[in-house]
Length: 193
Image (cartoon, rainbow, N blue to C red; front, side):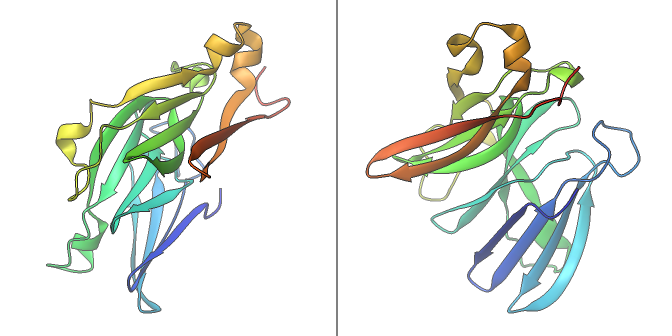
């Protein structure tokens, strides 16, 4: 389904994208990741426990990626950036956030990471998009102890209670601008029956 997320941090470039299989167990399910260092290809890896990649985020040198875990939960992954045994060690991530819905876009705002979701109603998850907020990000970054500390701060279903409309509502981009956090939505026609 394409390479949808890319980031450059120091000498590294990470490029990721979802596989073609939309449900766990399907052929081609899994997030693909390419890593380059100083323009040289280091390697690639396919993660079969999650399948989505839309936005990397760099917060004080720690790289985060939103995805969708096999069980329908959204996850935020922190790149460990372990250079002890490359290339394999460079593909290690830690779950630092668990939320409802596929974590489609990440943004840093006032010391916290915000994640906007895509609905996962077709796989038994949330209908409509939501915005989730991390705990305060410590200087060393989020780790596994923060995974269950994220809180929902907006649900599309609170704005529009029509369940048919909510099925079509996905979170769009987010941006911090002049001291405020803005987010959009998108409604893909004919996306659901």
